[in-house]
Image (tube, rainbow, N blue to C red):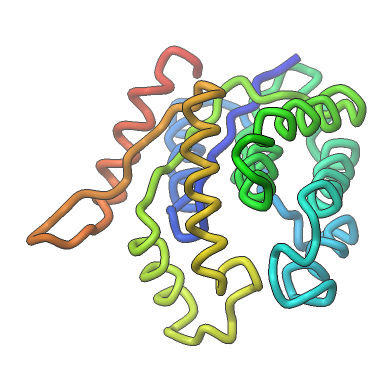
Length: 224
């Protein structure tokens, strides 16, 4: 089997940018790899995810319970694995993904009381990695960003128009719960936690893209 590296974090944490920089750095060194992202919005397999995020099952994230919504995302990953990158991975290839099962861990735990998180994580990993048969990651890079910074970055992404946000991005209370769940998962599961913010003049701001990238490369130097 190959290796699977995941970039994880809340919306606005820079996952896409850091995934791209990491992959390009490895390609520049001659490394063959396949880069993927979830949800796979170009595939029919993401239909239920798109319906959920657009509010067709209810206007709030909690309108769909943690187990039901997890299956939407899991099926999308299964389809991607079977049709796009599974063979490459099984031949020993390196696959780098922006989001994965780890996103279900973060976003669906936030819908449950903390006392139920461990039980949910056991169910989730058994469901996706064993029953569905998609591979578990070899490393997870978690980009830790304060909620107020994530919010500013998301608003900038959409030109200040909150109407362009999906139901998860609009819900500040849900995002706060997701961050608490993400920090818990990072500690419990041994993710590579990268603190992406710093304080300047009493205000939380993002570290530079280059600085974060350099730390990621250093942290993963023994794996790739």
